[in-house]
Image (tube, rainbow, N blue to C red; front, side, top):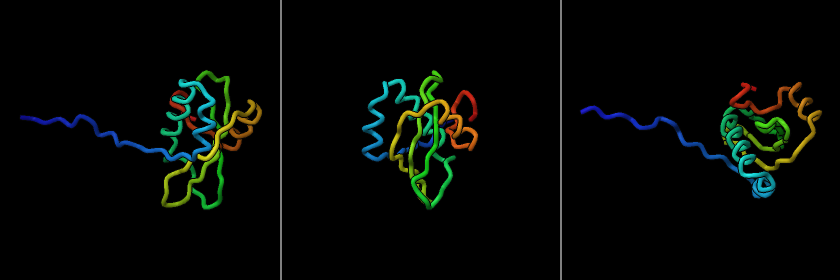
Length: 109
């Protein structure tokens, strides 16, 4: 009898500050799901630095809402997400130029 492994996908856990969760609650459920899926996709890709806080920009799938996330990502640890706030398109474009934006499933960056 052959046995098949049902899933090889490793479960990931994101770490959040209470303030982050409070600000995230200002977004709709769909927007929250979009933001969290982007964080899962990028969790291992964020640069590790001993200086903090760091930040990264993002945009929702609808392309109409832009945000910046503040986080700490020290060596030997997983990132801790501290804050999230909406930003303007111009602010987001500045972050794109500096390559400080989250990758998305649809664009690769």
